[in-house]
Image (cartoon, rainbow, N blue to C red; front, side):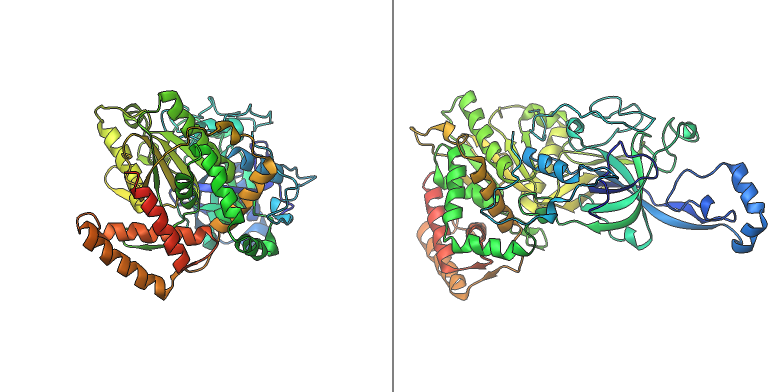
Length: 561
């Protein structure tokens, strides 16, 4: 597949392309003409646009055709609506564009064809608000391209009259090359697709000609793909496979190959050197507060490792509470810096403002539009392993509308149960999600319930410009370290001595502070923090030293409230 060009709106009909994208919607299954009496050139396999009826009738009447094809045969295929990976950080977008920018004549190798280690800084891509959740990257000017004859979306958002346009979770990303396609999946390839799953599709592009306008339904739309405008390409899949986002969508680690275990071993053998460098880097965004930086690092490395009923084991939503005395400008500065370190280290990061106005304005969760028969995209449709930074520093008193309450409940569901609510009007469906959520509030705890809350205590003499002074080579090494640890697999275990120590600590704390203050939720938080401390050391086993370090962090945290 390295020799197959990446899909773009410039690809002509009949082109063989590779499209790595997120499943945004699953359209209704459709029947197609699998076998025609006129022969294979007149079937609907790997195509939507059939030959003219007169040509089909003539071919069917030919003796050779009647000998081989007795009667029409129909089969079913599943149309998936795929969109470009949302909320990519600028450095990841640049690296992925370099890896996939190609042409049929001179295909470029993928990023995975090279090998790197933690110390390899070669070929490092340089890094360069709306009231709702957004990708905070400044949109670049769209590159000129030769689109198909039907033209381009009529606006930046791609919204047009009777359709939802390109239906991207972040519509402004069309300026940075984001696109979409309806992928027709055949046979066993259609089994078990999931919303928000990332897939790699190899298939044949098909654009609809102008002659198809007005056949049925809205002008310029395919009656089989209701609500999908004609400037969205169709791709007929030849091969489909699932993609591991933490590895294959992270340019910092995708090329490690056989050196993966070596890189993880190097991180462990450094005895905290890389981890300490990471905490210092994040602390530079927190006014020098290393305790707050520790919690942000733990949240950055969190991932859902197992699910038991409504409990998502491994997630760790973090609420950073800024000092009440900060001015609006100072608070905005901390939000920008914390956002920038997540953007610098993680390949995917979205950002949103949470206040009364924003909650009452746009819908944050996917909802079904039954007139178009489409699932309308939303900012909470994020790929596994993405980060979401919520800015609550401008939150003030006010009344939430019905939409505002629904949006807040959707954010709570994501934070508490790691699910994204999909509204189908008559019922709600919860789709599992794995998002690294950070809520930044001012003066008081977040509206969105988080696993841990930490009050930021900045150093008075801290130089905020120190964050920008970190060399790109250092940032790249931290990206590799974060990527390797974040993608670390294996079942997590707890050493026996830690289980005994945790039980003793819990009983002693309840005796000392009272059962009202030390609850089972308290123990769950301790175990969450301790588990993440172990992970941040590159370990899948919670050991006594990790537990002790976690309890020291929790003691420092509780002393601030």
